[in-house]
Length: 115
Image 1: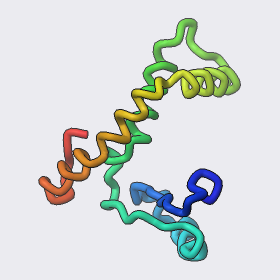
Image 2: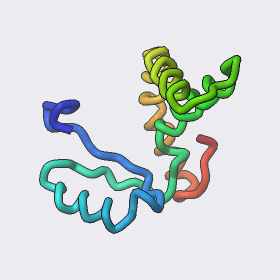
Image 3: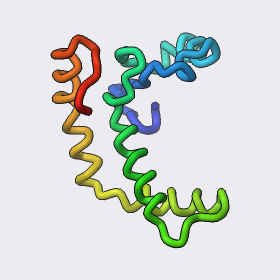
Image 4: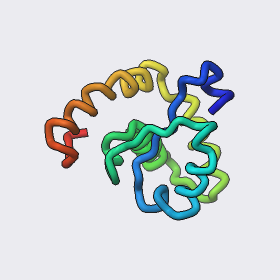
């Protein structure tokens, strides 16, 4: 966090999915709470996390490869290439969508949204 947000303004965000809310993860976050600001997120709301959109884009790119990938190393290579190839404007659009995502979540009182 100190490398990415040297200004100290960064916040850790996670979707409270079961693996993220494990005792080990929760304990680690508590132990590092003075080092990392943690943004409290609605439980199990992956549709609110832009990482889900990025993962879906990478998954589509992998699924559309021809010929199909054969080894884990092939997958790793393709994922790195596709990650590097994501247009900065696409990523910026996802970031800019956050106020709308949060507003949609508030409107449905934490229920499912179109995101």
